[in-house]
Image (cartoon, rainbow, N blue to C red; front, side, top):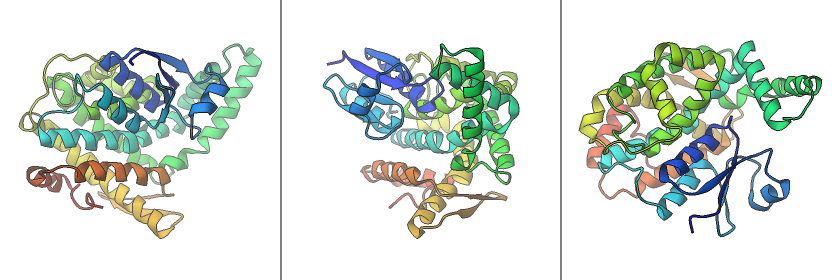
Length: 332
């Protein structure tokens, strides 16, 4: 049953490398197939939407979207579990996975296309990835096309002249908070990778590989750098820690980043979609964030809420969620 998995993705896709890291941790036999190397016939056969990663299972099913991929495979390969035993830690790991996928992607996409040096580096890498045999002239022309197209799409994650300083100051804060948290443990919730690690790491891995954010990580966050490299081939180095053990350094991340920035944004994004608004603004801390709504995110929020609703006992969790600012709106 474990033979024949194929992960069709790209090294520059945070969601692709997230799934690859998970498969590596689980020691699930698989093939890593670059999107440009996969046949179009195979891709079109299994992909319902034009995104990566695409996981093709041994029984010929195609799975897309990194979170449902991991949820589905985890049921088939439950050991070693990526979910902490502590019920509060378990859900917080799920919340951080959502935060990494949806808010962390804003840091990654913004930094990749905000500055000339990062634009050139990223467009060049994409050009080589998609057309490895192109001549220098062909490569340069293609890289210029990629750069023009992608710099025009930063609005998709909410990056604009108003939000750019917010994104960058928020990333700097997160880097400091995360480095402090990882100073005494190899992974977010202790001695082994969790659901939250995979979601957050995919974005940080891509940030590390780009010039500007990579310099920030390498120059000021040694523990984050160790974690990024460790998560390429994660292993169980110990047990999960209790919520009480991780809370002192994880709560600042949850309150200052998830509760103060991400959660108000996700609820405002959902409301904008419900109202049919073409743009929305929301106060995040001391700043006002303005962007066009993201349609997909409402779906991922619904998946998180479903996981919350499935919990049988929520008393302790609700107290912590309230303290972080993430309880309001958790119920659909």
